[in-house]
Length: 120
Image 1 (tube, rainbow, N blue to C red):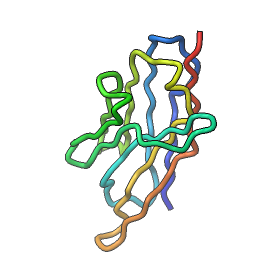
Image 2: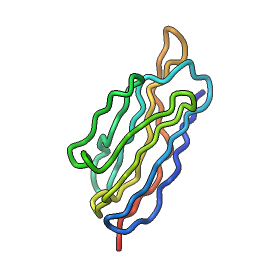
Image 3: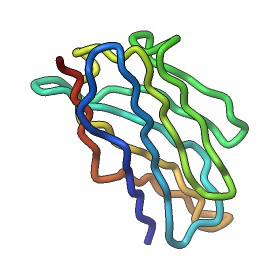
Image 4: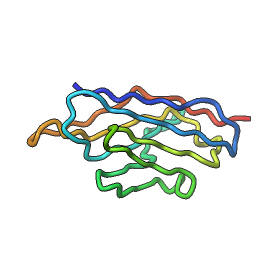
């Protein structure tokens, strides 16, 4: 069993910054891809950013230049540095990880979500 625990959400004014963290624990051989998704009120869940084990990254166009995803493989942790936040960034942010459990088995896991609210 693998658990993902997120932290770092909260209320911030427009133009402010937040840093989200996601730590995976459990029966982990390695982690292939870690990522952040978000769901705003009344909208579908969308990709924010993903990072592979080789640290290659992909971002949604709406966050490019403002958000930075990184990871610490030794700690099984991914981070999302969010700068120049806008009200439209308000959403529940979910961590996702594609975990290698054994040499022949991978599984996809989600965190419980952390609320980010950008408002004056």
